[in-house]
Length: 327
Image (tube, rainbow, N blue to C red):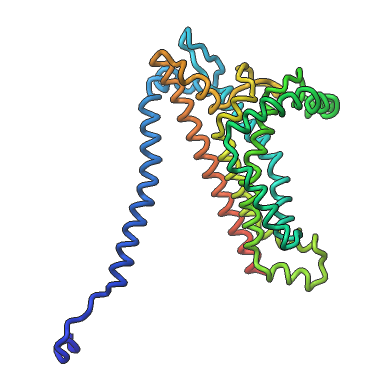
């Protein structure tokens, strides 16, 4: 104020601060808006599913009876099919995707990195229905005639593990659904893993090589431990897509059995394929409410998986950071 009285000039407004404040308010509103949209979706689904929730209670999640004629609904087999196909997809896709990402980030020459990355990421833009048609016309017959009989004759003869491949090979079953999901989530996991490997500081690599380590020892002891939190996040992203995939799985999973067995060769349902198959057939209010409750359960399962993946990422990132600081 003394400067203002002596000079006779008014102090200038802090335009930069005002712009920063406006930007902060706008981004906060967008963040809150995204949470509000998710909350609104959950409330809407819960409102439509409420008649089924109150009528069937927890038995909706623990029974496998799905009988629209007698209005008895249980979605345990839908949840089982969703979790099993997604787990199979993740087990098949993760080693291939991480291996491809390691090759691109650590071993591939510069002229080969971009073509390999671009070609792999093209898989992510192929429409789901195209995967479904390919699975129905090519993958299904191949699984029925070659791959599933081979698995039955080898792994199927082992104790305990062999139960996974017991029963007739039909080609349209939970295992085929998991295979096609693995192909679909492969580019997501691979692209994320590649960026994770690229983010590893070069000092980690140079320190191991300076100690006389080989290329593989450097990758094993420096790159992979540092990147494991990001790899878990990549797996979570792939699993999140696998949980909600609809059309491709619907065309290859069979959609014909409500039995929960240990065999991957059993035709089944996922929650998404059940909704796609039966939504237009819901001619009774309670039938429609049961279908919406399946959607609500799918949303909650996908949200829980994402939260668990995020917690694991925070845990491993923190432990790696502590190891780096301690080293």
